[in-house]
Image (tube, rainbow, N blue to C red; front, side, top):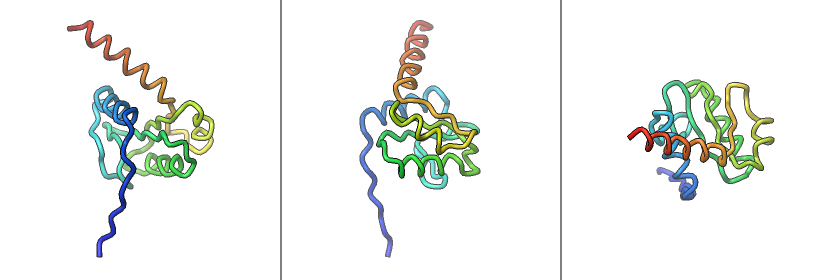
Length: 115
């Protein structure tokens, strides 16, 4: 008998950040690597964890620490930066969702001006 685990629907912010990471980092969405990672890029992975729950942060860090990911980027809310940094290895870059969103907006403006 198969057991199916339903996941929480992604928030609009999560969808936006994932789309931006795919575009900016030349990644592929929803790859199965020690669970499903949000974005798989050449050489690493990106996980977006906006829930603020420590258990979810630990789970995201575990996925990023797996050998296929070899580290990566964890995007968290500003209030969770210190917790995520204390849990993460050195090969995982922790960035706030606000900062990543600002980088995305700058990249979009730069790409628009190039046209």
